[in-house]
Image (cartoon, rainbow, N blue to C red):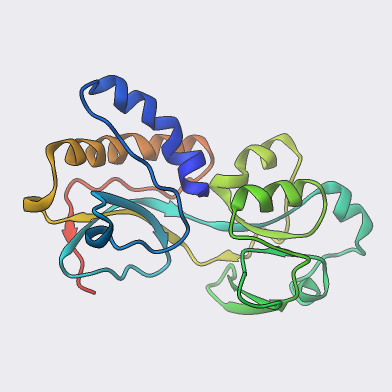
Length: 219
């Protein structure tokens, strides 16, 4: 949902104006969707590991990093300094929905990894809800920088422990083979591949790439 709101939604009007004869139907979900079963032309995903069906193709669009953020009003209430060792005991918010406890896999400045197990005050699969909760000081969040870039720039959120972050997520398009994709869907993929890196750069996602060709990914 975060990728759609901050990355894809701003691009839709431009595409529809460019090709006025084309209609687009959007389904926004955090669940993995079967393209063939649902008759969907293309899915845009963010995954740390690229695993898809051999009957589908993938096009890499960029990378997304999740960072630790908190509201200034919350930080004022916490003892200093805030360390990685203390993080599990501090109020947090999380995307975990299946359990009362969540785990964050973090990567350090030298590539070292740490698992932070914590009990979030709020769990929700919607990044918008988590971002607003973080701004209101409910807890520390591990959010995609694309989702919270504006709030960090405005000072509503502060990045904490900036040397630590989650594993990079790869933003990519998954679609049916060339023979099974319509010209309109192909044009849409090409348009997003061309314009999305500009959004990522503007919103602070500095690690982005453009792919000139689609590649087959073996599942």
